Length: 172
Image (tube, rainbow, N blue to C red; front, side, top):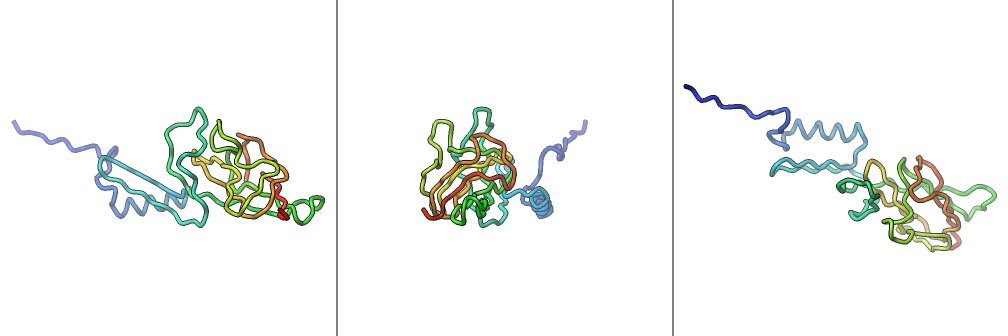
Protein backbone atom coordinates (compact mmCIF):
# COMPACT_ATOMS: atom_id res chain seq x y z
CA UNK A 1 0.00 0.00 0.00
CA UNK A 2 1.51 3.27 -1.09
CA UNK A 3 1.40 6.27 1.19
CA UNK A 4 -0.31 9.26 -0.34
CA UNK A 5 0.94 12.66 0.64
CA UNK A 6 -1.79 15.24 0.86
CA UNK A 7 -0.93 18.62 -0.63
CA UNK A 8 -1.70 21.63 1.57
CA UNK A 9 -4.68 23.71 0.52
CA UNK A 10 -2.97 26.53 -1.40
CA UNK A 11 -6.19 28.50 -1.71
CA UNK A 12 -6.23 29.16 2.02
CA UNK A 13 -2.50 29.36 2.68
CA UNK A 14 0.13 31.41 0.89
CA UNK A 15 3.45 29.58 0.56
CA UNK A 16 5.62 32.72 0.69
CA UNK A 17 4.32 36.19 1.54
CA UNK A 18 7.51 37.62 0.04
CA UNK A 19 6.69 36.31 -3.44
CA UNK A 20 7.33 39.20 -5.84
CA UNK A 21 4.07 38.68 -7.76
CA UNK A 22 2.09 38.76 -4.50
CA UNK A 23 3.84 41.94 -3.36
CA UNK A 24 3.12 43.59 -6.72
CA UNK A 25 -0.55 42.59 -6.50
CA UNK A 26 -0.76 43.98 -2.95
CA UNK A 27 0.71 47.29 -4.13
CA UNK A 28 -1.84 47.40 -6.97
CA UNK A 29 -4.68 46.75 -4.50
CA UNK A 30 -3.36 49.48 -2.18
CA UNK A 31 -3.41 51.98 -5.05
CA UNK A 32 -6.78 50.78 -6.35
CA UNK A 33 -8.45 51.13 -2.93
CA UNK A 34 -6.45 54.15 -1.66
CA UNK A 35 -4.95 52.20 1.24
CA UNK A 36 -2.09 53.78 3.14
CA UNK A 37 -0.88 50.57 4.76
CA UNK A 38 -1.27 46.79 4.51
CA UNK A 39 0.04 44.45 7.21
CA UNK A 40 -0.24 40.68 6.61
CA UNK A 41 0.94 37.85 8.82
CA UNK A 42 0.70 34.11 8.32
CA UNK A 43 2.45 31.79 10.75
CA UNK A 44 5.98 33.18 11.12
CA UNK A 45 5.91 35.22 7.88
CA UNK A 46 4.91 38.88 7.91
CA UNK A 47 4.87 41.66 5.35
CA UNK A 48 3.98 45.30 5.94
CA UNK A 49 3.57 47.71 3.03
CA UNK A 50 3.22 51.45 3.62
CA UNK A 51 2.26 54.07 1.05
CA UNK A 52 3.95 57.44 0.98
CA UNK A 53 2.30 60.49 2.46
CA UNK A 54 3.35 63.73 4.11
CA UNK A 55 0.44 63.67 6.56
CA UNK A 56 0.35 62.93 10.28
CA UNK A 57 -0.27 59.36 11.44
CA UNK A 58 -2.96 58.53 13.97
CA UNK A 59 -1.94 57.36 17.45
CA UNK A 60 -2.29 53.73 18.45
CA UNK A 61 -4.47 54.71 21.44
CA UNK A 62 -7.06 56.57 19.42
CA UNK A 63 -10.76 56.84 20.31
CA UNK A 64 -12.38 53.41 20.27
CA UNK A 65 -16.17 53.43 20.35
CA UNK A 66 -17.80 50.73 22.50
CA UNK A 67 -18.51 48.40 19.54
CA UNK A 68 -15.03 48.71 18.01
CA UNK A 69 -13.19 45.54 17.12
CA UNK A 70 -9.46 44.83 17.36
CA UNK A 71 -7.18 47.80 16.78
CA UNK A 72 -6.06 48.37 13.22
CA UNK A 73 -2.67 49.84 12.28
CA UNK A 74 -2.62 53.59 11.87
CA UNK A 75 -2.88 55.07 8.39
CA UNK A 76 -1.42 58.46 7.51
CA UNK A 77 -4.20 61.02 7.62
CA UNK A 78 -4.84 63.63 4.98
CA UNK A 79 -4.49 67.02 6.58
CA UNK A 80 -7.37 69.38 7.19
CA UNK A 81 -7.96 71.95 4.49
CA UNK A 82 -8.03 75.44 6.03
CA UNK A 83 -9.98 77.96 3.98
CA UNK A 84 -10.91 81.60 4.44
CA UNK A 85 -14.20 82.05 6.27
CA UNK A 86 -17.39 83.53 4.89
CA UNK A 87 -17.29 87.23 4.06
CA UNK A 88 -19.24 88.05 7.24
CA UNK A 89 -16.53 86.40 9.36
CA UNK A 90 -13.78 88.65 8.08
CA UNK A 91 -10.41 87.79 6.57
CA UNK A 92 -8.91 86.69 9.90
CA UNK A 93 -11.39 83.81 10.36
CA UNK A 94 -10.29 80.53 8.77
CA UNK A 95 -12.42 77.40 8.58
CA UNK A 96 -10.86 73.98 9.14
CA UNK A 97 -12.69 71.51 6.89
CA UNK A 98 -12.80 67.74 6.96
CA UNK A 99 -10.18 66.21 4.64
CA UNK A 100 -12.07 62.90 4.39
CA UNK A 101 -15.38 61.10 4.82
CA UNK A 102 -15.76 59.53 8.24
CA UNK A 103 -16.91 59.98 11.82
CA UNK A 104 -15.85 63.13 13.70
CA UNK A 105 -14.57 62.67 17.26
CA UNK A 106 -13.93 65.74 19.40
CA UNK A 107 -11.97 63.80 22.02
CA UNK A 108 -9.44 60.95 22.09
CA UNK A 109 -11.73 58.64 24.09
CA UNK A 110 -15.20 58.80 25.66
CA UNK A 111 -13.95 59.86 29.11
CA UNK A 112 -11.44 62.51 27.97
CA UNK A 113 -11.92 66.22 27.49
CA UNK A 114 -12.32 67.59 23.96
CA UNK A 115 -9.09 68.18 22.02
CA UNK A 116 -10.11 71.85 21.68
CA UNK A 117 -13.09 74.00 22.61
CA UNK A 118 -14.17 77.58 21.99
CA UNK A 119 -11.38 79.80 23.32
CA UNK A 120 -8.60 77.20 22.91
CA UNK A 121 -5.37 78.47 21.38
CA UNK A 122 -4.04 76.22 18.61
CA UNK A 123 -0.68 75.86 16.90
CA UNK A 124 0.17 74.29 13.53
CA UNK A 125 0.57 70.82 15.07
CA UNK A 126 -2.31 71.00 17.58
CA UNK A 127 -4.65 68.03 17.09
CA UNK A 128 -8.18 69.46 16.89
CA UNK A 129 -10.10 66.20 16.34
CA UNK A 130 -9.99 62.63 15.08
CA UNK A 131 -11.82 61.40 12.01
CA UNK A 132 -12.43 57.67 11.83
CA UNK A 133 -12.43 56.28 8.32
CA UNK A 134 -12.68 52.52 7.73
CA UNK A 135 -11.78 51.72 11.38
CA UNK A 136 -8.63 53.88 11.16
CA UNK A 137 -8.45 56.87 13.49
CA UNK A 138 -6.83 59.88 11.81
CA UNK A 139 -5.59 62.85 13.83
CA UNK A 140 -6.49 66.17 12.22
CA UNK A 141 -4.03 69.01 13.01
CA UNK A 142 -4.98 72.70 13.05
CA UNK A 143 -2.21 73.61 10.56
CA UNK A 144 -2.40 77.24 11.68
CA UNK A 145 -1.99 79.41 14.75
CA UNK A 146 -4.99 81.05 16.32
CA UNK A 147 -7.96 80.71 18.65
CA UNK A 148 -11.00 78.46 18.21
CA UNK A 149 -14.06 80.70 17.89
CA UNK A 150 -16.61 78.04 16.92
CA UNK A 151 -16.86 74.24 16.82
CA UNK A 152 -19.07 73.37 13.84
CA UNK A 153 -19.31 69.57 14.18
CA UNK A 154 -20.77 67.40 16.94
CA UNK A 155 -18.95 64.47 18.54
CA UNK A 156 -19.60 61.19 16.65
CA UNK A 157 -21.19 63.07 13.73
CA UNK A 158 -20.73 61.67 10.22
CA UNK A 159 -18.75 64.13 8.09
CA UNK A 160 -18.03 64.42 4.37
CA UNK A 161 -14.98 65.82 2.62
CA UNK A 162 -15.06 69.60 2.91
CA UNK A 163 -17.51 69.78 5.83
CA UNK A 164 -16.59 72.76 8.05
CA UNK A 165 -15.37 71.53 11.46
CA UNK A 166 -13.95 74.62 13.22
CA UNK A 167 -13.67 78.39 12.83
CA UNK A 168 -10.27 79.73 13.85
CA UNK A 169 -9.42 83.40 14.46
CA UNK A 170 -5.86 83.68 13.13
CA UNK A 171 -5.27 86.89 15.10
CA UNK A 172 -4.90 84.66 18.14
